[in-house]
Image (cartoon, rainbow over the protein chains, first blue to last red):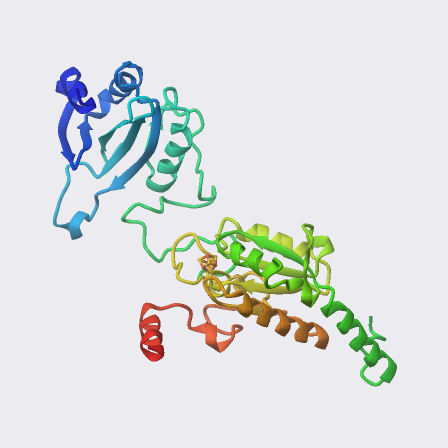
Length: 164
Length: 188
Ligand code: SF4
């Protein structure tokens, strides 16, 4: 049975949407169920997703030139891989603009720590329960979040030297 | 040093020449390598192109013991204070080489994170553009640097992006996509 089917059976109420374009199995889930689903993915023996390959976010402001309005501005995207079974799954969690916050996965996959710091740095999405949520790429003096679509493309915040 | 630079004294001017000659063939470089240009820098340093022919084969990894700062690779705003500190720590006389177009003008990076040319923070003596520059290009720059050292010249000025003063005219434009297309059309 495909991992996506397993998740769908187990958490049918928490899944907003699924698709599997060219075999890339994807589930868009409710934020409240993230921890439960992640734990299920990791700890079920026949799924055994022991590898968090990627964790990033998308900002849908001005999506498709502003023609498409999404209900929630951000989406946090997780890519999981099982080294044992050689299968993958992708989870997407919609995040609201007013309170951008999702649960941390640090306790399940240690690699989530730095990924989540990067997402905080670049998109300003907080991770509830993260042990050390600081900027990871930009300096502490940097104001704003550089990959948000409303960050001005020519805004510069040099530490030393002229504004260029 | 005032008696050394006195222009009326024949002997001391010859001494300056001798000092310049000695300095230009014993370049102790500090490689400040941050990005992809570092590979080309290593290629230039290895036996095929062999920078050591010019007396510049021995990198020192302490700024206090070096007299040429090779800035090799993209400098981000986060890195800029470190670069400035390293430059401040070097003893006079010192020279700076901007290696690669990222350090010369910022190159194609025009974004929130990249310094648009290290000459906005520290004075630059030799610009070696290219992404990355060919080793021949680097050696050419090195020989130009040797000329400068022989003459005892050092750059002391910074580039000001508002007035656009302080950078060679060929680089002052910086990278633009229109300029790039024009260049491609002109050479093909
Ligand atoms: S000039 Fe090109 S090769 Fe050199 S650091 Fe910049 S991007 Fe890399």
